[in-house]
Length: 475
Image (cartoon, rainbow, N blue to C red):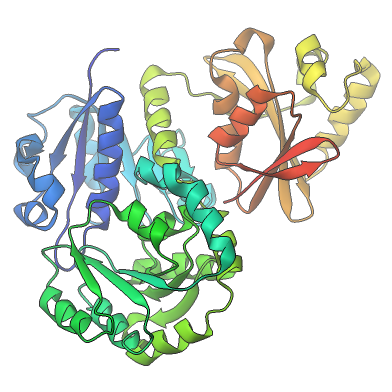
């Protein structure tokens, strides 16, 4: 593979925190592990705020040198002050533009939009992005370090006991509202073992250290922690905001007392609360130390909250995003189009293929007349979506989503000529991108290829049903 170059544009600081930087650096490290070269267009304040970036100062580009440092295969923008007006001129030096957003409130000129918000739908970006834009939405695309996926099973398993002995407080690198000190004050009389994590540039770091010293036992203050996954895995309860760290906590099934620290966190807070993944204390200005005390004492539903959180994010989102970027560069991303009656013979030939029948619930060949009647009924049913996957004007498979109660149930077929090329994962991923809520799939235990596809798009095994393994995810 020829060298691929990516330029990241983001900022960090005492007021805006370090969330944009953390998720961009996570993606950059994953891209570099896959052979990419990454550069960063940032301000001096960003370098002062993010120690891991300061250590890579030689990889940083002055803002007025972005165009001359190209060309790039990808410009990756994570910045609230950027929109299509700034992005379009960058196509002179960037082949593709990827936007990381969580507001859906302004137009973008991009080829991929990444929004980790729970419940996000393509409709939220209708009219804001080009028609060809691909949507990588929901916590299934959360930009987390690989340690979160590695520690997930162990962390989720230990939550089943409901033990509450250790608390981890993490309100981001800078915590401009000093919520950390407020939480520490609330935990002063609980006797719990408490850790608080902050960045060295946090404006209230000294106040946090002073508050930590008043606890019995004294709380530990960790500055510039580089092992957050391990710390979250070891904690019994998390306290933090409703930003990007939410998906780290969810990946490890960490029950959480959550605070809305900024306006852009309101949608996440509502969705996390509705999913049962957090106990929401409210808007930061309305939360006092006593709220933390009261809710720690009252938080007796830790196992249920841990399980609800773990269903939302499996920690593998960064790998999915890297795969999507590589597919974009390689030109191997299939597009889905609605199936029509004109596809009847094609779909039947795939359905009656010997390997397809062997892995289907019903292994007998389907007659043409029965198939046509079935296809007509599917196309007439608003609760069923049947799509044909197209790559370079060639059909490479099909995928169907059926609404069953409150969940979408997926099934798919890869065209015989397209097997062994990763298209199954890509086809199913494209359908998942268009859905929200519960998503299921039923896979034969003898079909490891489909099990790998289910896991690759974000599902986890949830037991057996009628001799089939049930895979599920919440998006």
